[in-house]
Amino acid sequence: MSAVADDDVATRARGGDRAAFEALIRSEKAGLYAFVRRYVGDRDDAYDVVQESFVAAWRAIGRYDPSRRFGVWLRAIALNKCRDHGRRALVRRLAHGAFAAEQAHLPASEFDAEGEGRLARLDRAVARLPPMYKEPLLLTTAGGLSHEEAAGVLGVSAKAVEMRLYRARRRLAELIDRPGA
Image: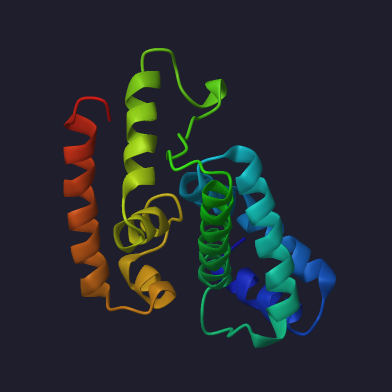
């Protein structure tokens, strides 16, 4: 969808046009899933979080601000759903006495045999980042947002996003290079 068409469709969706909303969801689905998948780690959980995000977006569509890109607004909703998922997962782990961090594994179709070890290390390292660093990293890389858009989602300045990205990348390099990471 072009930016002009996206604006028109978003405006119609805001007015309650279900078909327009579904068109927006179709155009955002793959990118949103990639973002959520990286954040939550598990593909089934990611699918659930994406669905929760779509439902929440439909319920809140009347509050959508057409001056923002729909995809940015949707990623803000998804980020909150990812955070909720993380809190629920923590409660489940504590309730079951499991304090070990879950390992994120990509499906075999998403990597080749040679890259498996490197991608698995990267996924584990991203999962270990504190939210302050993980969120801007995933919003800009997996989410495809600019620094300014990510700043709007996170409620910080673009400069803060830039600094957090720098620190996230530095921390990732440390975690990946560490034996057992």
